[in-house]
Length: 198
Length: 109
Image 1 (cartoon, rainbow over the protein chains, first blue to last red):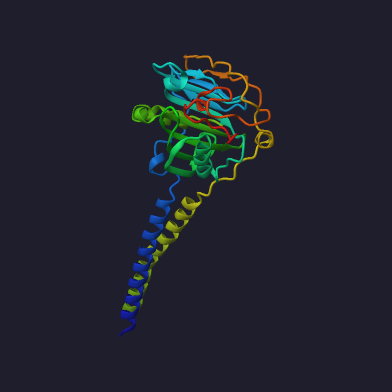
Image 2: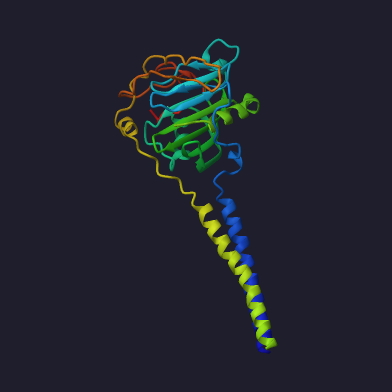
């Protein structure tokens, strides 16, 4: 074999190796995308014009659409809901938003496990993880989110629950709706989560 | 002379994918840096960790609606969390998640 032939074979081998590595790297970075499919809706943005904003005692901002009402909530937190017909608040809730300052051991790193366990600790049943992601971008920081289903004594819900950490503080935002209304309410809930400031 | 040119040409051709590989490697590195940022432990968070909120106090002052753009804000004038756990199952302060409603974002308290 001539020197030229050897060089040509070497070049082809290097080229093939490089192409294979590029393909592998491209695939790898895709799988670690910071905004995976279930969270593709997350586009940090200011609240739409006309929306209201409720604040927690820590200063977190929870935006909600016109027509939604503040409802009873834990001290220091803020909850609002879109209400429908029914006798009491839990039955009336067609969609729900809550903002709560970080209170316990919840962190961005343990969020998926923490949130699902938290729901089980609240005696929710059939808690089922739909999706989770870390290192998501929010308006003022990074966050971890889960989407999950669970059943309470009054009905089944789907929720988006995120913990968001900024340089100022860490807070949790929850957006939920009865399973039967999720498709109808999802876009509004997702938009509210996208505007959250912890 | 011809052989030298050919080798130079082939070496140049090989350099292109290698450069591309380097660039892709850099891009992959930044995209892969998705490790969750450590949570910023605020003073209030530490305090809350030690002292759990008391029996969820009174109802929150209502958030007023201010429809004019840009969105107006209102402040929930609730007191900071005090100590003790929050009863669930139709107990506590009677908010939605104590009564079969959606679960709120409390810190497992």
